[in-house]
Image 1 (tube, helix red, strand yellow):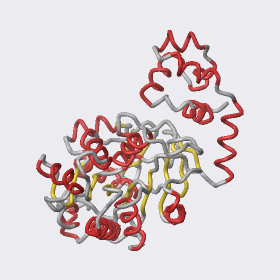
Image 2 (tube, helix red, strand yellow; image 1 turned 30 degrees about the vertical axis):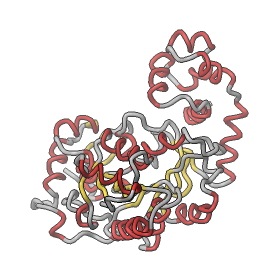
Image 3 (cartoon, one colour; image 1 turned 180 degrees about the vertical axis):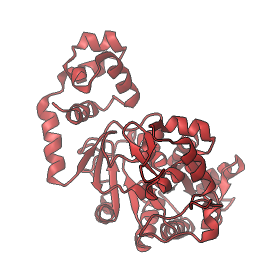
Image 4 (cartoon, one colour; image 1 turned 60 degrees about the vertical axis):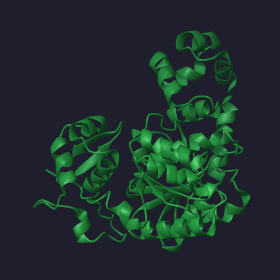
Length: 371
């Protein structure tokens, strides 16, 4: 059994996240050894509950094989943290998914992602704003990320697609169980122009408890989160809170003060989230941003100061930290003092300029041509 097969098996247990997996690996060494361990060893050696230990022991090889066959049948890729297409931004969050199911493609440029989230019961104002922001962000070179839900999510995906941009949908069910049903055609369109993603086994139903887990992935993929129309107990605000915990930027579109559907977003603005009255309010938080090849670029003035080698100030700072010896992303972040969004965008730009390259385990080094 390979590592990826063992990890898919552990992911089928559902109650094992990356934090529990790390604890198990510290004791057993490999994913395969975890699956071979007895119930008592799992409980006593790692302190996990008897229920989870029983599920691991009772897992059958046939269950894992069935999952791979289902994926192959629908051209769904299965990624782990060591897979080339595993999104770079997710490697920075405290609890990245053990496994990701992917329909479509993840490109290097998708690291420049901006999430748009909001109410399922959106007003015409909210839907119009979500579609407008998504379209303009896509035209500016950002990948628009959302959750395929009714309302704001749907408008955001459609706005990006209508501007011929890329969009990623992260869902709270398996990719063989698209929810909501009326968005199945939209899901197919997204897979052709971006990616459908889920960390849940392929046939997982859209259970309520899945969506908070899904929300941390939406924010984790992104440099920032834009909240459009959300009440105070909205799932969109859960995503915004994840974004704050993960060091992402948070933006909110202001709404009417006399409607419950805008109360959450307005409260977030009062608490310090940046008010977004137009896409320029978002773009100015990424002044060094230059779009990858094949996308519309920002005006030269928006790229920020550059040195004679064509590097922005942020790029030059990170380039000076990274040497011919591998340097971890954590060390880059610590030594640079930059925000997460600035680090991710600058690292991506340096890779696109072939100054540095990404290595396994969140390490970076200079390329031979880079200096």
